Amino acid sequence: MYNRRKFLQSSGALVLGGTALTGTAKAFFGEKAMHPIGLQLFTFFNEIDNDVEGTLKKIAGVGYKEIESAFSKKDGYYGMKPKEFAAYLTSIGLSWKSHHVLGAPFKMPPGAKMPTGADGKPLVIPPMRNLRDNTQELVDEAAEGGVEFLVCANTPINTLDDIKSSIEVLNKTDEACKKAGIGFAYHNHDAEFHTVEGQVPYEMFLSQTKMQMELDLAWATKGGKDPVELFKQNPGRFPLWHVKDLDASREDILPVGSGTIDYKRIFDAASTAGMKHFFVEHDMPKDALASITASYAYLTRMLG
Image (spheres, one colour):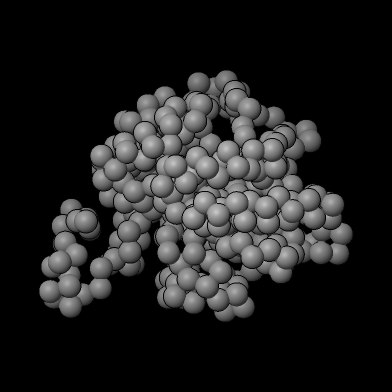
């Protein structure tokens, strides 16, 4: 299986299953409105650039309300400027909350091959800007687009020197984001929880930066961490979550609710985490639309 962990490792009406219930009606009947469900667009990495507007309309049609953008094979933000992308999302009922960027120039892991696209040919990835080399440019564009958070999706952590250099970049970006009036967070895979030269990268990030965290709940679980315990140890530090599921082997990604992660327990701790937004994600699924539809159905049942 080739997922994003491997791919990146080195570098308001509320619709519930067709029943619309407005926030006003919920307030009138004394019910708590369900938190909007978001989607990380990396889920559609293999196809979105072929039909950006059509793909986004399908996502909105499922019921998703919030978007976290990611890497595109087109220039800019899926071929658009920040304000243009934000305006289009708004026009179809979606809200752009967050954007993923790389911490350093992308490199394929040693011996790895570029994954193939739907046509069976290796993906061609254009040069991608990164926080090490393009900090202010990326921060300014995120602020221009009106997103609440810029997120470092991946940064080098193979050696202790890598980690220290990454921390310098992350702190620099955090300060730039504060000046621009937006939040900055770090998105983990499972590698951050494994020891590197006697140190645990994630623990170093928590202790040596003031940035916030986007906890990928599945990768943290795979890395041997209990998300709820992380929330208790660092209350309010996790405003963003990634929500995906894993099979019993912790190797295969599944739609939310069809795997082994106890999401009810995790969502019950949302206030301790300081969660503001969460995004469903499924790395390189065979059928992205089917996956996000299943995840949405489960989450609306659980949270509704």
